[in-house]
Amino acid sequence: MRKYKNFIRNCIKKNYKGITSFDKSLIKNLFLYRKDFLAKIKDKTNVKNFKKDKTYQNLKKIYFENKLNKNQKKILIYYRKFEVNTSLKRFYDNRFKKKTKSETNYCSYIYLGLLLYKCKKLNIYQKLNCILKILDKICSNPKNNKDLDKLATMKLFKLENYLIQRIKK
Image (tube, rainbow, N blue to C red; front, side, top):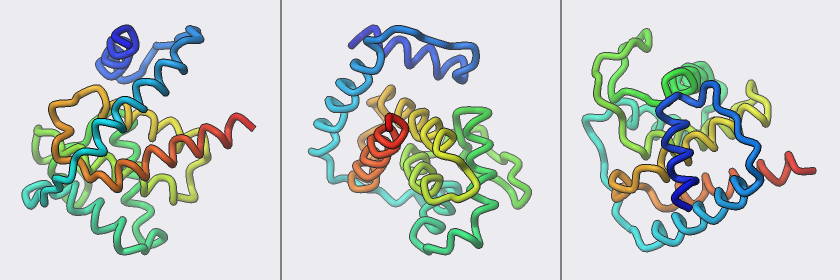
């Protein structure tokens, strides 16, 4: 398990560039690690409202509005920013240029993953790749997981498993 954690931390540091692994135990360790993480998350009931985090507020608003066609362009911009930098900032201006250097809350990433699943402009491999990166980021840093939205996190884990099963077929 420790080997897997170190591998994921190394991937995140390098933004997943130039890293390929042919280790068969990696997938087995992935599922064990996620199962362990889910067991820890089930105890949590703490959800904060992050008023200063505009990225979190925007993604949450888009998710609960259910107007995906109208906001699909914004979702794709957030997706590209995450794919390139493996992080999102707390505040962007109207042209999506970062205004702060501080990273957004981890709940923002969860809502981004849930929105990407609904996005029609991405194929299944792009969706799965981004969701895997989001969950790796969340699982690799347990200190910041105390304020996660439990229901949304569980839903994202179910989507990950569903997408993996679809690809296996």
